[in-house]
Every structure is written in structure tokens, then in C-alpha cells.
Length: 257
Length: 266
View 1 (cartoon, rainbow over the protein chains, first blue to last red):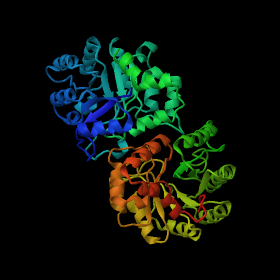
View 2: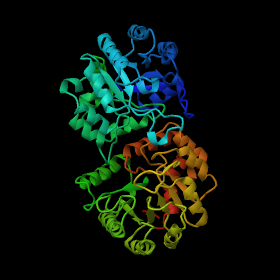
View 3: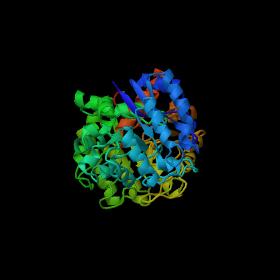
View 4: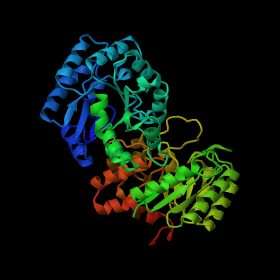
């Protein structure tokens, strides 16, 4: 079982990207052996009301059981609590809020309230450090990267919140993990899509230092080739039980447990 | 066969205590990926006694010596680029001639001097004498200077390539940062410039754009310092290209632009 906990549907405003339709993502999943993908409506991240894509997302995921909805929630918009209720009712494995894309202070009062509500609702909160490398952004894409400090503030703000942080590199992960208490660190999961493999072996190092339990399989597709996350695991000498944890068990029993 | 046209190794004079582990990790990963030959470089002292992208002549020579020692140690797996700093023209040209005798198969230029600077001309002429292709570090669409390097972009590399039509150039790491679309547009009419597919970027659509932009005949597989992204691109290329086109990218194009005899079976 391989779950992609970091995937998107829909067009990207800054570049023409192939394979963004549900059929395109399903084809990529088939190609790379992904059984289930947790998907967010990508254009919504750039809309004034990011929740306006959620209805389409639910409808799409209802038609295709291999896709699980991760709806957007914006804590600065009225009735955001209803988004959490809808997400729970729809069986969403998580919700997503990328505060810097939404113009929200990532460690401000709105995000702290959202973190507490997600904790109470037992809905993991997904945040991306970035969607694209800062070095190659479109000139109009000035959204800064999420900071490690913001993640530390969120996980400290509520003792029940579970965070899934995507697109983080080794330095980011280490700063948050070792800047948190063991109890706090146990409530953060990281996807592998931005962590380097050999010869630098950042992923191998992190699995040894931070722990296998903290990582989930995620690709960032279709903005990134999903083959990349599979390749990282294939290049490790990882026992089958540890690979299973990363590919599905940590997402099911830890993050969503 | 799979040839990695953009590899690096470390050595004892670099600042990293783990240099042996990094070299071993590359050689171990290549067994899983199926890399037959690493065409590699060492950039001076990797910053220990002179900057990575501005190696002193002494560091460039020491790095090259370390690389050719590795080539002698792994004659079936490693080939070397000679690295020089074009600001020291006399040293650079002499070092290229020296390295050719030691078994170098190409020239590596990092970011010590802008690619379109006339100071590079005698250095490229030296490479041409030995039929070396030139792997040039590139920032894809450099909109401003970046610290630590005098980076060039594709337009600047193409200006150099136009002045040296009988030398083949390799535009480094199309996925290594910056706007790769800008580079692909710049390369269209410069048929002596090849695209190295390495770099940490694995953007959706990038490989399609490379194929559409310059054709499989001008693409070269490489990994640079992220072999996982290299493997990912290799796997995706198997879906994107016909087998004959894939062979061009994985080894036949390299076989065409490196000196005869550089690789097994040449």
C-alpha cells in the first residue's frame, strides 16, 4: 500500500504543467504504484476564498475512491469552522492551510485558533513549506517559504494538533524536530518529497536521527515528478517494515490515528 | 549503458569530514541506478582554502589530481573533467594540457568568470585542442548576481558557444535552479550546446519541455549532487521517449561529444 499524502489536482497559475486533471494524476499514480492520493485543489491556493474549490474536490473524490480530499481552510474567512465540519463529514484525511499563500500570519492568532480546532476535530493540518524552489519562481510569485519557527509555534499552541508539513528539506526538519519537545515532535509528520537522497543522504540521516515514524510518502505531484519520491525510497537500504511505515502506516495510524 | 555527465567527488583537502562516505554513497547508489560511468569533477578545495566557484590555481590543480587519482582507482567507473579558473589564463590552459595527459575527457567551468567574457576564449581553445566538451555551470535565467559565484545563464553560454562552433558545450543542471524555460528558448539555434538534465528540480513538464525545445539528440542524463532526482528523471524518460531516443539521452549523445575512447566500447 502506497499513499501519496501530498498531491494536487488542477492547474498551476505560474506555469503550464501536464497531468493536472484527475485522470492525469490517476495515470501518474498508476505509473508509480501509488494506491491512494490525498489531493488538494491547486488553483484554490491562489484564490481569495480558497474554500471555493472544495465542493469540486469532494465531488471529484466521490467519483474516484483512490483520491481522498484534503480541502483548503482559511481561518481568516467567515464560517471556516464549517469547512472543518464538512471535511470530517466527507471523510477527509486532513485539511490544508498554506498561510503565506492565503495572506495569513503563519504563527498569528488565526492560525493558532485553526490549529486548536483541527486538534479538537482530530483533523491533521497540512502545510507546505513551499510549492516551488525560490530560485525559479515566476517574477510575480513572491510568497516566501514557511519558516521553521512558524511550525514550532503551531505545534506548541495546541496539545492535540497533528501537523503534516510538506516540501521541507533536511535543515528545516532538523530545526523543528530538535527545537521541539519529544511530545511536540511526535505530533509532526514530514513528507519525503523535498529531502535529498544519495550522495548527500539527507533522508537516510533523518530516518536515523528523527525516526522512521515521523515520515510519510508524498510527491508534490503534479508540480513534481512522483517518480522522485519513489526513487528516494528505492535508493535506501530500508527494511520492508520501515518502508511500509513511510508508504502508508504512518499516515494511517500515526498522523490520522 | 548509462553515463552520468555531471558527477562530483570529494577529497581529503575539502572541508567535509564525511568526504569518504559521500564518495562511497555515490558509487553505491550508481549500482542501484545502473550508472556505468561517472564523468566527474572536483571544484578545487570545495571552499576550504579558496571559494568553491573561484578555486585558486593551486586548489584547482590539487582537486584535479585527486579526481584523476580516483579515475585511476576506478578505471571502469570514473572519468574526469579538468576544472580550471579562467581568471588565471596561463595556469588554466596549462592545466588543461596537463590533465589531458592524465586522462581527462572534458573541461569543467564553474562560475569564476561570466561565460561570454573574452577571457574564456583561450581556455576554450585549449579544450578544443583535446576535443573536450565543456560542462559549464549555469544559473537558469540569472536575473541578478548571486553571492559566491559569477554565474552565467544560457544566453551568456550561447554567446561563447557561437564563438567556438567546433566545441561542444554542456549547459549544466537544467533542474538546478532558475527558470529552465528561459534556457531552453535560448538554446534552440545553438546546436553545439547540449542540456544536462541533472539538478534537484523535478518539475512536472520540465522534461517534456527539454525534449520539445532541443530534441532528444541534445539531452544528456546526469545527477549532480542529487542522485534520487536523476533516477526519477530516468524513470520518467522511459515513459516519455521511444527506446532509441532514450539511448541517445542515457549514453549515445555522450559518446558522440566526448573524445573517442573516453568510454568502454568507443
